[in-house]
Amino acid sequence: MRVLLTGKNGQLGSCLQDLITNTSHDLFAFDSSELDITNQEEVVKITNVVKPNVIINAAAYTAVDQAELECDQAYAVNEFGVKYLAEQASVLDIPLFHVSTDYVFDGLNVEPYQPSSKTEPQGVYGQSKLAGEKVIASTLDKYIILRTAWVFSEYGNNFVKTMLRLANEKDELSVVSDQYGNPTYAKDLARSIVQLCDQYNSKGVLEWGVYHYTGDISTSWHGFARAILFKANKLNLIDKMPKLTPISSESFPTAVKRPAYSILDNSDLKRLNISNSSWLSALDIVLSKLP
Ligand SMILES: NC(=O)c1ccc[n+]([C@@H]2O[C@H](COP(=O)([O-])OP(=O)(O)OC[C@H]3O[C@@H](n4cnc5c(N)ncnc54)[C@H](OP(=O)(O)O)[C@@H]3O)[C@@H](O)[C@H]2O)c1
Image 1: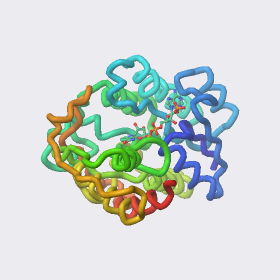
Image 2: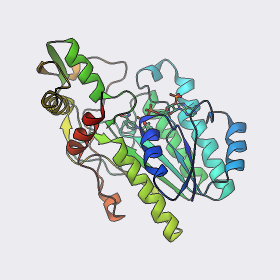
Image 3: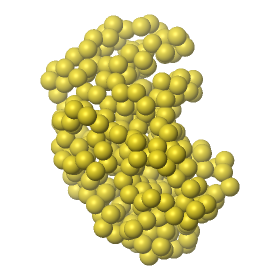
Image 4: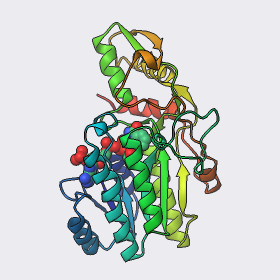
């Protein structure tokens, strides 16, 4: 298959490149300077030249707090850029594989969010991502949207790298312990997308729609930090084990209130033989790849 990938240098984009390069698929991957998805002419031109069999969109505006100040830019990428990709997928009659976020929910649930659960984003980032989901659903029949959360990898900026940096700078770290979610390794998310592309390639069809894909075990940011620091200390990636103090969200204010509860139910994907990943084992892999 000819696979067109946008946002090739992000966490997910980099992992997708690693995986697809080792398959029989022909990969046509673009970063934002080569294909800016907010530029409709560019989207039309490049998709018409590449003539892909599938489009995978790993491009997104992901700066959650900054989005409150750059609302237009967040919507330009997460709604309008996605719209241009969906329109071209429709013209070419090919599927679009897209990724969304737990931030489309209000975070007030007490049980895992289903793909069909009521959406209620709390900030511009989540609202713009939800607008992207809606524009895909209204433009295309053949699409997969995977909502994910707490993404980490050896690439880009993420919580794992932040914890390692802070551990080498400070003797004590205070980390929020009243927000719950599932850390997700970007390469496992990428693998699930490739598996879905392969299923489409072999069957010519998929159960299109919105799914949830996250790591297997729920924890708090404090629990995630504890696992990172424990493993990093064993691998001598940090000079010493800092004191790790649990704090409440209230004592760590951010521009956008983070969801207290971000746990997403993955059962629908399991029906498609896609199992969610063990993020603790993935953490070993990521830590072993960091300098
Ligand atoms: N990271 C998380 O914790 C998390 C959680 C839930 C959901 N998600 C979703 O998962 C997906 C992947 O996230 P990620 O962590 O891989 O994000 P990321 O590392 O921030 O990568 C996003 C990529 O999008 C590119 N991009 C931005 N604007 C673009 C444009 N106009 N045209 C083309 N490319 C553009 C960026 O390129 P430049 O750097 O060149 O601008 C960057 O390479 C996103 O849809 C995100 O919303 C992420």
